[in-house]
Image (tube, rainbow, N blue to C red; front, side):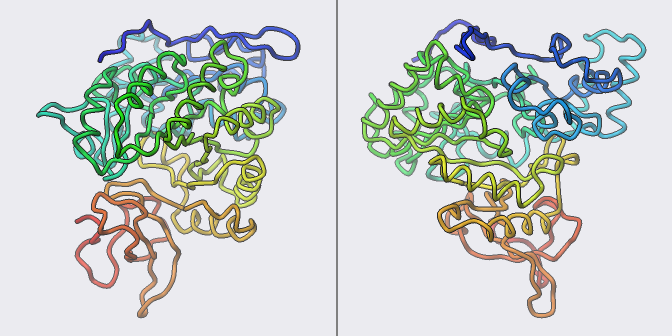
Length: 447
């Protein structure tokens, strides 16, 4: 079945806020200067946005701008940095290349191929996403599906391949560049159903993007109801990966189809499937507004569970107090802390990355200061080529200083939770910079 719906690239929902009607207002490269707060930015800061946004996608909205950012201290504000491109998010040579073109009045059409060449250098699809994770059905590649781990399949519905706002660290930034070869997406659900039917080990389907909850509810329901009607006995859990709680909580409260969304969530739960909302919160500031609290309460009342995850990132949340506060607040609100990730090796990784050792120390210190009820979280974890590799610590074994590691998930399930060791490197920020310890030729988790 192919679902045909009109384009929903820009939503026009209205919400009731503070006694008056407010429309969802996206801000991106072509219109961000209409923001009331624009006068706070210097000419150089605006130019930096113009340069960086030619390479890394830029989009925010009025909720983020008006409710989450501290404009009195915006230059160091974590939510501002999370949404607005910063000069150093591009490497110096890439920044100067685009800046010189803009200064000389080069047209957008001429800048685009230069920007695309830079994008190619930023590893747009790391960890084998294009070559190893794309399954086939009857000899044809499913262009909107990834299947890396035995039990879990990722589905990218075409109409959900954008977001209410873009995170500047996003490892899926290529989805938003307009380059077809970079994009995972499909609108047909029947091939997905048949693939699940043929792979009885699949128990979980993760709707991802982009943000599936950017879609109108009737579109999302078309996909999910087809899955439920297929009566797949092996399908136990439907997951929805979303940043909407943090970036547009009205999606769950007062958007014109918010009630329909809650009804859809209840329908999933009442069908006997587990519904997990995989929520992305990068800082405890995103949990503080009245509207996000309302949205969380509405979701939980449907019987759905909300699990939370985020990478640890320099300039945003590389502080154990931030993480401990965020986990504790999430538990108090009924959420389940799930993952602390490490910034992936793509896009602006050089701007956000911290050493593996520092990431482990931040995780450990934060973990030590919360009670057992918040220790559901796993981290710090790299989603790399072999799988989800967790840094367990740094120690000295047999006279050699090493990183202790294990796979929480792996392409080969037999490798899960088997510890392995890498030579200590104080500068390492990612898996591919690690070398096996104790004279081994390679890490067995790559088998």
